Image 1: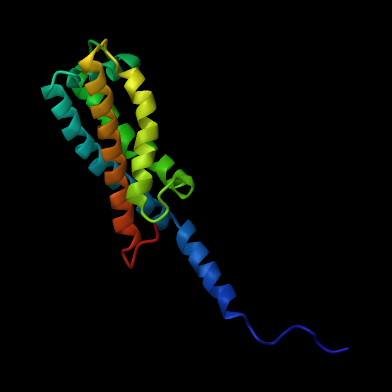
Image 2: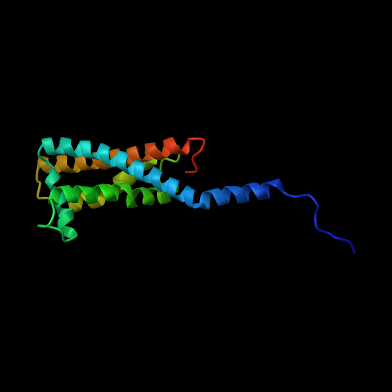
Length: 174
């Protein structure tokens, strides 16, 4: 009985291995992390503008970021508002973009990462609005809720726009 193995090689098998190797390479993983961090930085910068508007209206205070410094036990040792904002920025640049990248296929807005990001930001807002509530009431409470929701939607849109931008780059693997 002769050799029954096919003598024709499947070119698609080699291509899929190459794509998988590129996707799982250390350089690809680091590049994806940099894209996520850049998106988080853009989103957090955009969100901070809305927070400054809310502060100018008297419904939110940037000094509320000191709550984060207190949570990690650094109160009294470091500039509380600055360190709190740095912690907030770190959260916006690393874990939230990672979670967005993991969940964006399941979020509404399949046509655009910016639309998916808006929904993601809205979902994130539910925790923020309770954690940073400082006793506002009446119209101030309504403005606090609306402006912090807007800030989170803007964060998600900025994050998604960066993901959209890098996903369409010819040399990107995001």
